[in-house]
Length: 54
Length: 301
Ligand code: SF4
Ligand code: SF4
Image 1 (cartoon, rainbow over the protein chains, first blue to last red):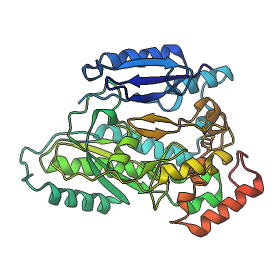
Image 2: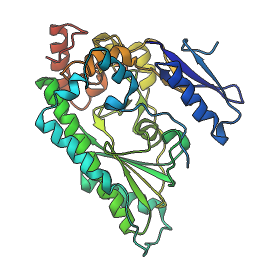
Image 3: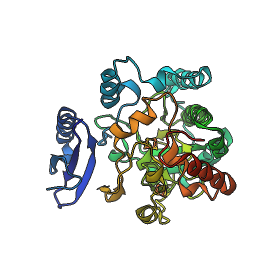
């Protein structure tokens, strides 16, 4: 199974890991839901295999 | 208030578990198919309570101008209903499931401790105790929410029968303790041997504060849960979520032991040294058993 971390990068540069997911489809669905929230509009998301942001 | 934290679905609704089960040519996870009648009865109990999570609010509202006094009363009520630990915080978006709306200002965590002595009796006894406590928490949350509604304030119970909030961020914020390497929150007296009942409400309440007493630093050097995990599912490295260290359990490695076998697995929590304070003799006897069967052996005695 694929292992993918979603990291949230906040406007001030702080990184907060959303979680560990097991398919790109699941991870992308979660990122899309997060991006639709007004309070997250300034955040960027990375879906990566590493525990840390590239 | 709309939530921002994804929830991993439980049971066969979890896509990771479903795909592993289907790859074995099965319809359901062996752990669930093998549930004994006593355990099934507890599951039925929280399912029955699902329809009483929310309800009509008494139009005659009691005075709400003393949040500290009201918090004391609510905590006393939760204890009277059978809770061992009660804490209150202001509800925040990261405590709510992603996309779910909870229209309340406060969260009350009313938790029940498990009888740690059961660890010496094996996995079935540990599981039955966990399910008993989950059912008790569902009853407490249901009754506490009904009590608050009878005082004239909206209130909703969250438990295994239905929930929109997440226990760990609430436990942290109400000051129960800190998140451990094994993925559960650690209380200084009960370790992680307690289960959640939660009520969200608009009743004005004084808030508790987070309390840190060195758990996360201790976890950096303690590897007892990792050494005992039969699936090697507990990681060395941590990530940070909202500034707090979090060790993410690898479910693909955990499930073969915790869901794809008939026997329950709760070893990571049961071997944690934070159980020693409440049950020193049992903890030592249990660790002796673990050494005898061999660390990483998927059996509890
Ligand atoms: S439940 Fe069992 S297999 Fe899963 S992380 Fe804990 S000890 Fe490991
Ligand atoms: S067993 Fe040790 S490392 Fe694991 S959660 Fe408990 S204190 Fe932390």
